[in-house]
Length: 166
Image 1 (cartoon, helix red, strand yellow):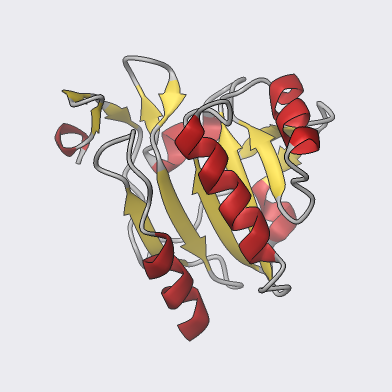
Image 2 (tube, rainbow, N blue to C red):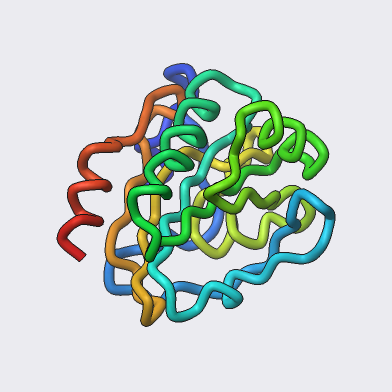
């Protein structure tokens, strides 16, 4: 898996266990934009889209976060969770500047708990790779996309089509 991921054309190593369709979604801890603890299990019994980005302060990550925030309004039964290793202060500034109000944005900067449990932690940069994980209401992983080139967009249409069929 990790030998297939590149950043600017250069291979990167993803740490942790690769998450796969059919796996039980693992609980993880992160930090909310107000610095309070976030626990993934708080979202139990809901369908969840985990939008994984390296940094909200980059063009593609910004687009990805805004796009899924907009899609969240069309799917009120789905929770959109964006996660990066940006500091909560930067995430809060980004959310305010871009009207991110329909999704939850959390930081994995402290322990890389999500990154290691879901196989998205980039060893070389201590950032998260780009990807999408969809988890059903029973906490089973139903869709996974590790974007092969970190500087590329995920397949928005594919994940949204998949969501429509859930």
